[in-house]
Image (cartoon, rainbow, N blue to C red; front, side, top):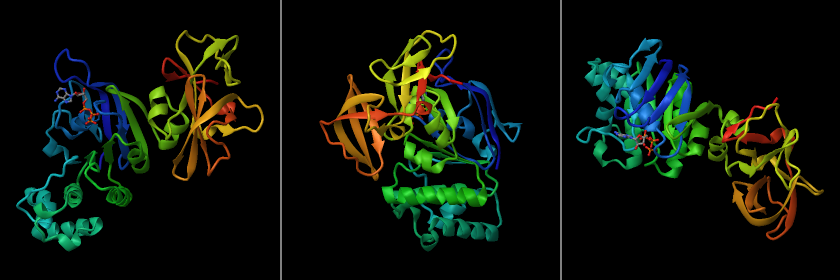
Length: 354
Ligand SMILES: Nc1ncnc2c1ncn2[C@@H]1O[C@H](COP(=O)(O)OP(=O)(O)OP(=O)(O)O)[C@@H](O)[C@H]1O
């Protein structure tokens, strides 16, 4: 396993073309689980392919345990990559598919057999080792693809490029659990590419949130939830998304006009588009006059919680209530948000207030 450093890395697909991956600096710890999360086209696969060696970056270096591998081919980087569409060798059995990377490296037959059996046992493939791989369902084929990545003990990292897309929901849940257990057992460095926040939050210790070719924040699920660095992260992480309301500077406070939501302004605040944001989980219905008054226009469920959609001044404010709230559609309600739960954003970036 390896620590992976992306040093002053950037990529444009042609000279003079815009960056598909804007300049970045990242370190991935040996044995850590990471997710690359972002909307379609934000540069996730570009970054993954640069790590695996399928793509040479136009700028910067890739280091594995301090060794510069930027110019090395995939084969010598010892990377296992699992793609969205399962890759299997159609004419081989499940067992032969699993053992193939070891056969290619000339491993002794007894070692191949032992390793294939161990990995098959781990993934629940043991009963079908002698079946033709081509006859399997898409789910099982993807398990075989994953197993081929695990069979080598010397891999530097396992890169998973949306591997769960073809998997049905129940198996997806099982597979995420299996991946976690494998990481705990073997301490493999694992990077999962996904555009699904639930997948990222349940799999990874640290999530790299990307947008428009840029790494906008890297952090634990809690950090991303509690301290989003940009409006994009506040909006992309959490369900429902963070609330954002237009704000302005009045004397020494940043306020949302027409409400009691306000935060002390820092000295010398630059000009720009100000917003106050808060999580639906951090707002409560207030029996007294609260910070903001509006009308309930929608109610829906997120798991066991109820979410109230409250219309205020042409904005929809969401409040997440544990269990069932007494509020009804059409009712006027008042909500309160603790000041320490308010985040201020200036031109899309969070201000770090004292
Ligand atoms: N081979 C290529 N040649 C030119 N541009 C490319 C190439 N591959 C990707 N791009 C562009 O680079 C940008 C990033 O693409 P990339 O595939 O890395 O995004 P992604 O986040 O993985 O998207 P998705 O989730 O849809 O796979 C996009 O604008 C895409 O059109």
